[in-house]
Length: 353
Image (cartoon, rainbow, N blue to C red; front, top):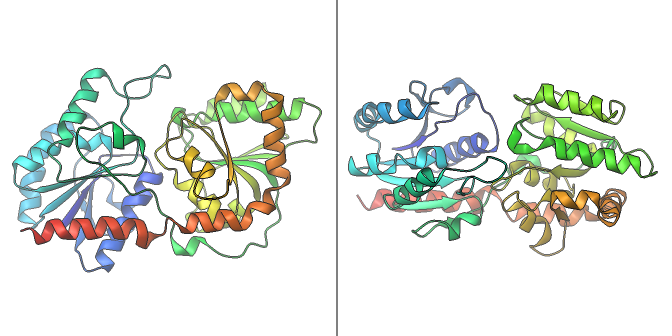
């Protein structure tokens, strides 16, 4: 039996979607898998319930009880989801489990934006990786950061997300995201303001999501005088997302940091090109590489450049010409190619016993 340990709480984003689909995929392949979580009702796959581990002291204290529970359940391999769980690797390894780390964000020392890890945390996570039997990473930055071999697997897109679109393009630019500081939504608002201040035709935008930064985002939109240009909508059910992407000409990621954003693959699966900050992990390489370019990567300072603004407007105006290239690029990261690779590796760890 496989257990995917998830320490996240009150968050539903790409990382949670990833492990939910990984759990489902491995069960479909005959490998009994469950997600260990304090919020089992948020997942639509087999789960095991544990107490809250949002605080690190609770995460550490509960790990020894969890070890006993997992052993009674016959768990042989534990998958530690992302950096928030990686530091528990020595505990589980020394208790006889095969340990796999699945990294979404990349390990970095704390930066000027206050994101990342302190020097002690940074060193602890690097040390903990030595207790893993396998380390997978959704982004490429981790390949150079850890003292052990890290296998880049990328993100994935599910087959149901592809399909023909007949929706009317209502928005020039769109963000679909948690409304968190990490996502740097004010940068998106700044861009929309600049595009509308340069005497161009009005740029219409969508921000779809929920999170702790909502009130600040509402204030920023009002301060910029963009109430008629930016529509702020609450989070939608996943079944509605393809139609929402179809209403956007160009997708945007303005994050301080990412791994390999699920939303970027979703946008491409609907034929929508994208702009993305260079700090957004693998996203910048994705739109610029893998054959034809399907978007633009940038740094925040580029917003002041008229040339950059015009390149964004050109991408919007010519978005339909990127349709096939976007879909073909998204198809390179199918479930079978990504989740299938992880499943094969985990199955090999089981066979070692």
